[in-house]
Image 1: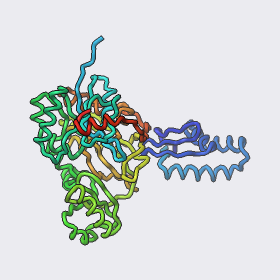
Image 2 (image 1 turned 180 degrees about the vertical axis):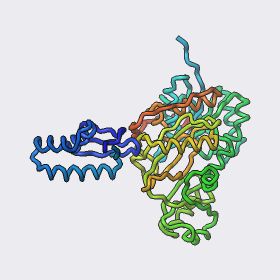
Image 3 (image 1 turned 90 degrees about the vertical axis):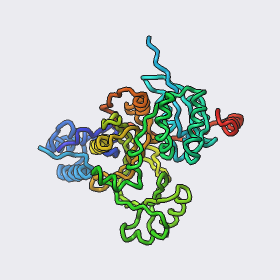
Image 4 (image 1 turned 120 degrees about the vertical axis):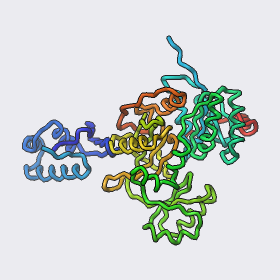
Length: 82
Length: 349
């Protein structure tokens, strides 16, 4: 699973899908997750990082993460692969 | 340093109003052409077309007769303008004036005036009254439509279509109608302005996209720029849009050009439904009012069109910038009454 290659994400959390012309905004945590995914970080790495950086339980992070990924999948921002 | 050649180019469609003609945008693009310098001769129908008064863009404007006046009247006026301006190229920007200009093309060529226009056959077969047959012939997905020329046919629409439907004029105007009464209202409104037939078209829900492009008449795509409408006016015109990368639209454009051997600029109006399928709603046989976006993304279509008109070989553009937006605006010019009098009474400014 990865963010589609041509999806542009600005530092401020603006997402632009060049295929559809649609733009989305995400909050700073969402932008951080997207950038981490783009850098190739695994879920385990992110869980460790976010639970130590923010006051969040591992299970809560994982649930929120999955919700977020599903939302992005619905908007065709993610490609599932190897 | 070599100097660029100078071309005298006449451009119509100076009505940069709420439902704008493409002329002013075309002229802006021509002013940025790298392969030539140009003198711009505006061709106007009405005295208040804003482009007439944009002296930084338009060097001189002449009023010309409406297409309904007939090709002899148009020819006479062009001869007069040509005697004054030594025209190299004419770019007609209205659907309704293409018919006379296509017919006049051989005569104008003899006079040394070049144009890049579709053939009469191409112009006719893509016409919205023929779009069903066009879709079948070229294997392009178009919404079902039916032409009606008598209001008594309105009651039968529900046999062939599910409401809402689109009610369209043969040249301009389109309204969404949710029942037969509304169809009748729009039928009367449109037929009074543009005549019959009126086109009843299946309404496709989705997101509106447009592609503007240029075909060389040999089946090659010289340019293609797809855009998603971001801000649509009450008249359905794009007031803002963004260039997008969807390959399906480029493929559809290539298919349209290669199969029809389209020559000239054009605009494809597309609707993308929930299943991501594109429906071709209309083919406009000229450049659109948002053509300046093509310059913004690296494909100066008006410049390429002029070079094609001049008989030159034009290399196809192979890329464009994705994510460039256009945002239209309205601008009040201050015009001296003398200028208005000159264009109204003398027919030139």
